Image (tube, rainbow over the protein chains, first blue to last red):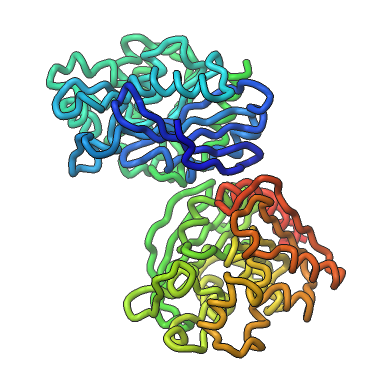
Length: 276
Length: 276
């Protein structure tokens, strides 16, 4: 692991690191905010998964999360959204290939060799960071934005017992049923739609439910709301009688101005579960 | 004036606008955060002047100021740092020309036609925004970062009565005596150093003092601290017996991770003056 940068931030350290990933078979970059409390021992962790076109950097500089995390003594991990570099497949479209890993393990050409973001987030990066930093693996929570909200929800449901709470900002809720999903799932996983189901929060919610606290915020003026389909997940949550807080926030759009506006709520929500 | 974008943000609106400026003779872009309270009448204003290489956008997305401004019911204005566009002089260096206006009215070729950022901030942009938005000209405060901290300090001292309080993050304190200053002041204002004095916070402090509250934060690990010379201004402030809070923040550098870490303090400091 190499240190790219470390900046003092809200009494802690905002670091950026690169490492060679076994999961993706390439160098990966991630951001890690360590609160001051990490000097004294392992602290709880909130994973933040980013959306289409983002790198590790977007949320790290625009989401305004560090101040609230510092207040709660929680670390933040900001992974990249895909493998990158020469020799890694890509596509001209903004929503496929590099910057658009969709948090799945690709099985199809040309994506299969590197596009294994599920394993990267579920196994590879945790092994690295829990070994290298003062982070408590027993106290993990996860959130994300848009494609990253999709990733947070599907990882939380797919790895029961891993996370104590899950939240999302404007997540892609039902990707098997929309243009933000069908295109990518067919490219990465092939045409057999039974293999897509584990990567659809609505289908997984219907099938398995969720046993940890859930908070979702979506802007009522989100320009992509028809692609996000919050109504599908809301129906599934209600049908399964899952305790959850699903909010539509009046007038907000899909931007980081929206994310930052509700970050305090999300960090406080996770802190309650992480310190329970 | 044209609207580039408007995003709901912390209950208010983060807007970006362009207009044709008489001062700079070109189109200028600025960001304006209006808190929810602006729907009911004019609100106080905090000007934020940015540093070298920045546009209107950097602080708007990275400083984390809107949440605190929303809490206090204060508007934020994020001007650009220089004229821009075809026909506007520039230089290959990052610290001269476009992105590096230094908040002066240039008198020298090739800068004189457009590089009039003092007038732009002091006269031109205020005329526009106080006419177009629900902002209270009687309640203005000013802050800035690095070159923008220099601008905030020199404008506050050069326009007595205009601002109720002034603060700065890692300001260039003594530009007539360092490489961040001598190069630009000689290029924009010529070799007669008597014309530079009004654009040096330390010299102006020694000469005129300041009669409004002053807060300055600088990181003790700022990689540019030798160019900033906080010690020169600190000496001048103390020598004039000016009430002020000058802080060196342990371990912080020059980045927006530093700025965002102390933004809450700065907004609260200005709110106290604006609502006094």
